[in-house]
Amino acid sequence: MTSLLPISTCLSSPNTESSPLAHALSVLFEPSPILSSTLVPQVTSRLSLLPTNTVRSYHELIHVALETISDWDDNLKAQFIAGHPRIGECKNLSKLSATEQGATATTAPEVLARIKCLNDLYERKYPGLRYITFVNGRSRAVIAEEMEGFLAVEQGEEVGRDAWKAELNRAICDVGRIATGRLEALGVQ
Image (cartoon, rainbow, N blue to C red; front, side, top):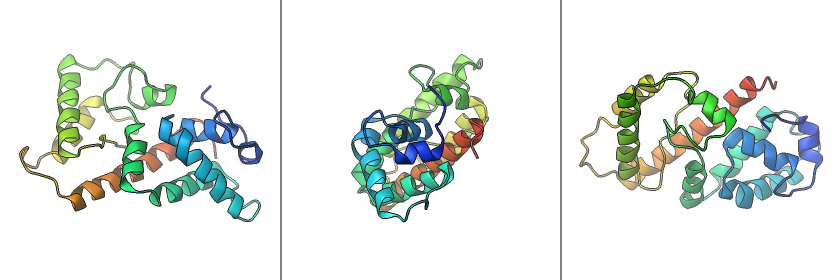
């Protein structure tokens, strides 16, 4: 089901793996083990500490979730990022990811091959991360150009810890942009 219940229902239900909150966060951020095991319980805990009616919209829930994620160590953040599909994947995508990535659009085989190669290069350069970008209706060919520009640094160059961490934080920021875009796609204010 790719829809969201009213935010009041989402916030008033008990925290379980199948709760409206767990479902909402899975729709907005992609289902993953780290989302179920860590994000949902921590967001529930954080929400319980806030005054009643502080979070009145899904935009505010996204904000609380991103604040929660920002408190995580880098390993948990990287696990969260890994919950998103690789750019250009055509199988095993959530309905929203398939729409965002244009999974049903005809893409030239050479573009798909190039994206696969770029994903591999990225993941070697940034071990444990996955390239995340707010696609926002752009074609796979345009995303391939973006990735090529991003990876323009010489292939053999090692990435230092600071650059890896900056890329991790950039990816999390884009996950937030994706979640907000999903609200718009679902017609949620």
